[in-house]
Length: 329
Image (cartoon, rainbow, N blue to C red; front, side, top):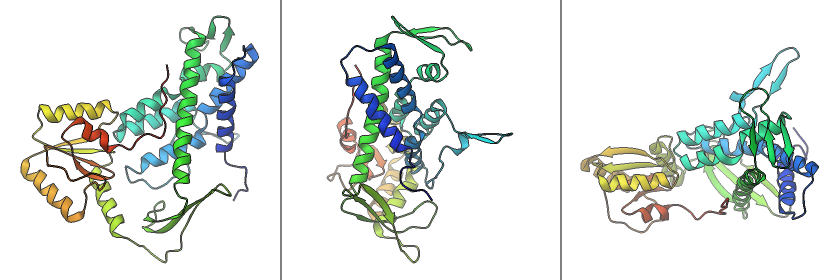
């Protein structure tokens, strides 16, 4: 058990705010200030305690239970004296990108790959750099060609890292605060059977809690419906059932790919799509957010349920509006 003040997300948020304050200053910077900014950038990249949330969230798609140490497979143990060495930012974000790609979130994988620059983090963390009047010189004394990054390029990397963390923090805060007032949820907590849980956020104390007192397993129609949807997604964020793939369905698939998703595409005949439609009617697997739609040759399954897709706009309507958008120019 730990008392207050032991979660490293505190440090991550402080570093983000300090870095943001530095970046918004219009005053000329000394070499010492540039060095501090770059070191804070490395700290933000290494905030693994924050990025564990992303790892666990993506595990939901493959029906994985919550892990207290989600990056444990990347940990190295040294003997004599025994030391546990956690993964650095390079390994952490490479692992996140691989998992995002595996569940069909190619756009998210690209964001992980571009969030923080490995060359800057490595150079600063290993004191293998020189701040000069023409930019950041990465010496790469342990191998590789030396490289000069103009300050404009360094600023872009800083903006991208700060922006990535800002969006993540915004989304996390919105998710936490959505549980005020408290909500009753039937679901699995880690590897336990489904039970009733109360999830709540107290704005006065700033506390978030999950509590339950179920005497045994509990299910509801809503839980059974979601379990049926999840099992049919096959470990992907999206699945598409296409009637005899043609130019129309390929164009829709290309549009979905451009939006940053790679669904599991299954080419089925008319009889199979009709069977799937009957199954959706019987088990209530339709996306309740959509108005009644005419059947087409492209049936998309998302975590919200099944929906017919006829035009690219139909897919765009599927996605909730983003909480924040940041463009790096």
